[in-house]
Length: 180
Image (tube, rainbow, N blue to C red; front, side, top):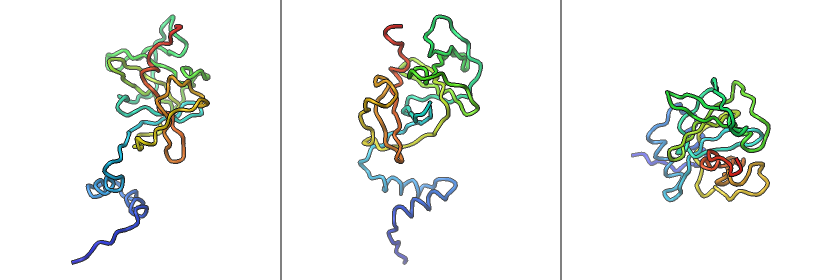
């Protein structure tokens, strides 16, 4: 009968990252490592302008490569137009312009992130995707005043791997401004 020694969690994590596919053993061990009472929040992060931003994964529907967008007259400047996705018309918003920055120039790394709020869908043109991350719900902090993004668009700020990630409020980004 052999006994298992308890190993350093950092060494175990490094070994887990070397595997190609997750195993049930690694999954169960990660639950133990995180702790049973610690809530997590899944976010999809992306870069827009100089900032890393994110939506909750529950708000995100899909990611598309930029394609032909039909302009719509008499709309705010931040609305690029509409896009047909499997027969459904989606409003496309330039996230940089929504934040009051210069317009996004569509690059090969640019993506349109489709987000849904209640019964509304919108696509946000972003510079590039960062990926899906699980962060501790307790790491979400109140947004400060000087983040370069209007406060009404923020749910909070997530500290992830030493970086500040702006957690965006999809509802206020989709809703039109009062003065429009």
